[in-house]
Every structure is written in structure tokens, then in C-alpha cells.
Length: 366
Image (cartoon, rainbow, N blue to C red; front, side, top):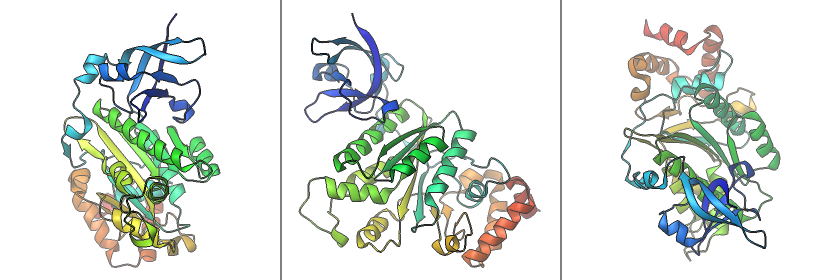
């Protein structure tokens, strides 16, 4: 008797695959369904597809797929007719992914005012140590889950502390994929690649997907240590090919014309004292279309969120601001000549005076 089982396909180097479970962190488990190569070839399956299969269990207790019933909720033929991710036309983000929830959410309100997120944004949070990046990412995740429940929200944590993984899982409504620092390097690499394929497959179906990554720095370190050396060493002991996959992950963010979107919001470390970390930062610097700069000196004075407002911005922000672009620009000019500390203090006072961003902007649109 056959059973129906669903999961996310991971294809191994020898062309067979297994169904991994989202609720189990996409981990390799002994009872994962085996997907034979002929089934993959026949259905033109790609890594990362979420599918439902009929199965049988052999005498040894191993579960094997017999046929593919659905792929992302569609018949296999319908899924096969979809254009592949790399062939979809990408355009600049045009729909604002608003974060503001209430008057007390200073992080969300400041991002909306000075470095807005749009569907398909490639956002980089540049963070010195102890500048509040983890809390900021949690606030962003919670705001997206609250304001945009129709979006598929995922978090990828690589080489992070186990307690931070637990905190993320408890603080947001979304799926957290993690490989903490006590996991092996091979699992870091495997999980990062599978999550990339998974969010690409979802975007192909027209879904709006948001992926938060903490952090690109640790992802780069993991690929530097865990993959085969190219024989060419660069600054700080970084292999010449170490950042190929991390760049593919971050570069996958895009808004699809007349389709879905993949928004990626990733942290990257700076001023850590590591030459390797500095080089990783330089390689990603300027590759996003939104940068949020955190300032350690502000955090040390307990000024949170420790955002350097003057240094934070979004490319083509007028597409997101629309008719309010002029008011936003007047607001920016009002803090442009101030120091980072003065600018943040002024904005925190304004946020305390006005309960909504709309009220703040009305003051500058008069």
C-alpha cells in the first residue's frame, strides 16, 4: 500500500535525491523519502522543489518514491511549463514593503523613512560588532510577518550561536533554517545551497518570498573553509572561489516582471579586526540596492536603533515613495548636515512627537 508524503527535494551528486522536511530544518534524516534518478529525469525535477509523492516501504524499512503527484501544488506538467528562475525578467522593486506597525517601532519607522524596502529588494545591513544587528533583523522579520502575511518568510542562520537560533524561532512567524556553529561545515554549505534553490523554486511559481540571512560574512567564511580550494589565495586567507555561492545567494534577490518576487535582507559584518571579514565586506559592498548602515558609536551610547541615517539609502527610492518622494527628500535634507548622533537623536524626537510616519511627512510636505 502506498502513502502520500511531501517535502523539499535535495538532489545528491550521484543524481538521486531525498525529500527533506521544512519542519525538521531541511536536515538529513534516516526516514527521508528516497527519490530515484529515473523519477527525477522523467519529471525534470530541480533541487528545491516542494512536491508530493506516492511511496512504498521496502523490507528494510526504507521509504522510496513511486510517482510524483504534485509539484508546488500543481500537476507535474503544469510546473514543467513554468519559466525557470534565471529566464524570468527582473525589474527594480516598485511595491513598498512597509514595516511600520505602531508608534513605538523606531527601527521599522526609520527604515521606511530613509531606506525603504520593496518587493524584490537586495538589502544589505552593514553592522560592526555589538551594534544591534540581530535585534534589528528580528524586528524586520516580525514586521514583515505582521504587515505582509501573504509573503513567504524564511530566515537562514549560518554559524550562529544556538541560543540566537532559538530566539529567532520564538520571535517570528516564519520558517527558520539554521546550521549553528556546533554543526559541521558540510551542513553549513549544504543548507545554504538548498535554501537558495528552495526560494528560487517558490519565486518561479509567482510567490512573493522574503529571505533574511544572518550573516553573509559567516556564510563566506563557511564556504572558504568547507569547499575544495581553487589554489588561489586572496586577502586574509580567502580562497578566490569562496564567495561564488554566497554571491549567488545574495544576487538571487529580484522583482519578477508580472510575477513574484524574492526579497533578500542580509547582514554583513565590518570592523571586526579580521582581514578576511574586511575583504568579504568589500566584495559585497555596492552589490545591494539598499544599504542600512549601523554605527557602533551610537550603540555604545545606547542610542538604538543604531542607524547611521546619512549613510543609509535605497536605490530608485522614488519608485517606492511615489507621490511622497519630495517630502521624504526634504526630511533627509533636514538631517544631512548633522552628525550621525545628532541626526538619530533628532529623528527619535520626531518619532516621539508624531505617532505615524505619515504625520512626520506631512510636516515636511507643507
